[in-house]
Length: 266
Length: 293
Image (cartoon, rainbow over all chains, first blue to last red; front, side, top):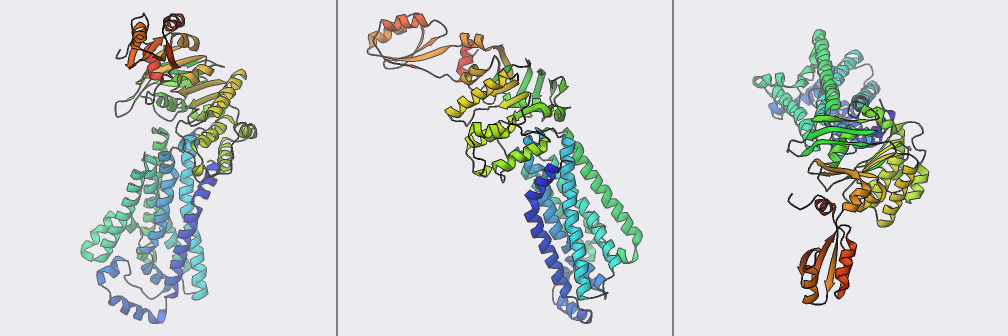
């Protein structure tokens, strides 16, 4: 990989990265402060006043009785995907498609760096940027939870939940990276990079909303994250992680292959 | 050194380059001439290994340019035809970035070239004029002192003083034994520095020739104003190749028969005389005989 190019990516993306990571962590903190084991019923009552389908669509199904189940249902049904997806869409789009479309890729290729080296550098940045965001979020969220509700959070389960989520991001991010690589112009890259994950999100919400619509879960990658399985169905979690890794490997692998072969009209 | 072998690259639109072949020998400055859209950049992209040829191939130092681009790049300087830098950077950031991408000792001529082109690097590239960007591109292409230079429309955007400086730089590099391929749509520019040139039109090479020969065969034209209709008819009825433009104005085309023109003009009352600057297209349409072919 090219360290010079990696550094350029950092300079080019640090602002949006810091912004979205901060919002993500801030959002978590707010959700966390709303947790009160004594008054979970009160929260349930508030939610009962809202239309049931909407509450379910957002994944607020059953808050359970532990901090883990509260976070799992409040955050990991839907909202946990939002900020990392925005980040990965923007970054993946910039990593390849913007450079190709604007022609600056010509300057990278006119140096003694092979296409393989360039695309692998971009792939690593794509994976590292989302990983660092999520690892930082995980660590800070554990610290916050421990400070506010000492020993309430089952850290083992929580770490597994976040590992599962992160690996799933790799698969989702792979879609954006793939779109960015095969695109000859930025419209195509953004078109696919935004619409596919958003469609998955919509399916996820529809699947959540009503039992009759649960077949939508079969159409979205997000159903690979099952927060209940982490509590009682570890084999599902392992399969989910393997499937996510495979999807990510295929998408990133294809991206490398195509970038090496394609015509670059720069 | 640089070889283009039966290169065909067809775009989905049907345009492209067809069966293009030429060679640039070591130490040669080679002009690649053609009007806009003739296929110069398409050929150069292939020389840089950016695209896959439909047929044929290009080699530099015997290496296939598509397969071994990164090896070739070690000793190659490239100026893209369309300048697309990294907008957010300033000039310093950009040159540092490129030299870091290239690796050790790849900015040995940087300071010298910055002074030579008199460029202020403290501006954001986004805010630079076209001429400044062109200078920055030239510095990036030359700063690692490569043996081979491929320059796509190198003088576009430069003012006449900088064009002269560029020509001087190319002459100096030629003295130092560098191999240079430069594309242009301006004949005059190529004629000043190149020893050989290929002319491309609508994707096909029309001629590859020593520059001296191209020069002597090249038709020139002059616009002449005369006083009255009698003088006008004298010119039109002479053996010269002429074209009546308007009123008492006539265009005369010659190749090397200056004397003939001067003799005719000395017998009339000339009140205006100027050389036209032919576009390349006109120049080699004339070189190749009549328009329409």
